[in-house]
Length: 152
Ligand SMILES: [Zn+2]
Ligand SMILES: [Zn+2]
Image (cartoon, rainbow, N blue to C red; front, side, top):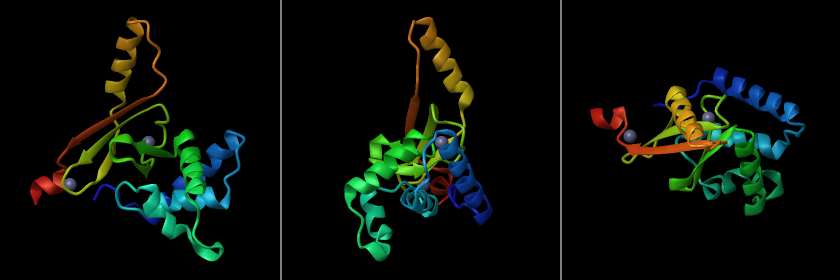
């Protein structure tokens, strides 16, 4: 289970999120906070429409543009990532990867594990630089079968 976060790491991630919002001069609104909590609690990548009904609360069901704005915000700060091939979002697992990250996506169970392969991406950035290209952001999505599904 790659995304079975303990409460302790959950709290740490919320504190990190708060810190980054302050550093970016942005406010960590209750909605943004709630969307990040839902992503942290969600097992595997979540689509915006999976999160909508969970956001209801007292004020009724949240509107799609509201949640998309919150997801955009979290993605911009590197607190969440958008997995293009699934059109879904995951909370950032590593924390220091706003610019480059690799996801290992299981074709059987749908788990998306954030993979810390910084060196591979540094090599990529260096190679691109030799070609005169400055990479701002790298997002690699690798699909295959996770270790749990291989064992099953
Ligand atoms: Zn990340
Ligand atoms: Zn799997």
